[in-house]
Length: 166
Image (cartoon, rainbow, N blue to C red; front, side, top):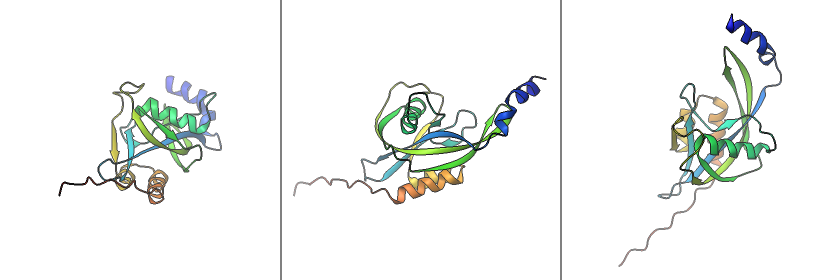
């Protein structure tokens, strides 16, 4: 009976169109070793699958600010977020007994610092990957394409070679 009550109270969510919108941050950095682009993935709280930080719109925050806030809360990273979206992808979000369609608007965020303490520390696993590895680990085809497209248009940072004594 509890499940039926939940479904009845949320039936409007199942038939809502268009898809619900979320905002996400594609967090990236350049390797200090070779200047290569690296993408930050985190695990979802429920299934443990690899995702990027994302969430619902937030009152008094623009879309890109909300994406940056999600990156801080979920991954403990801060940096420069681009106010122009790099793209979007779609997925089905499971909610207590049913699923809804979500459109995720993605903003790039150049990571400049890592926080020692953040809201979801210990709840998620965080790891840096090459764009190719990150794309291979995410389940959503649209996110996979977005990661690869972004890596193809992002120029690696040249590394400075140390001058040896000669």
